[in-house]
Image 1 (cartoon, rainbow, N blue to C red):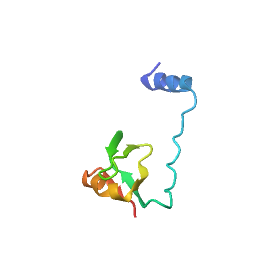
Image 2 (image 1 turned 90 degrees about the vertical axis):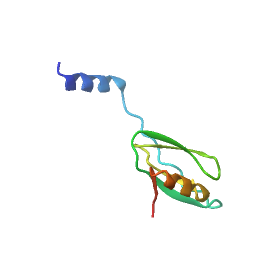
Image 3 (image 1 turned 60 degrees about the horizontal axis):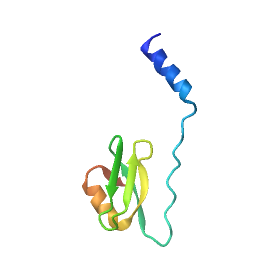
Length: 83
């Protein structure tokens, strides 16, 4: 069996893939900004003001982030604020 055929068979045996749900929209009482991750893989970032841990992945690159944490995330070069 070719290399591609082996990979296909392995994926078939694993069963259906799990879809990661989109992040919840922001709460109206907290100012939040949507931020997009421009990197690859998984990235954990601590908010500069709140200390909240944000987890970004290539599959789920956008999240709503507290407004006070946006500047620190954008400064890393891995994130952009979504207009």
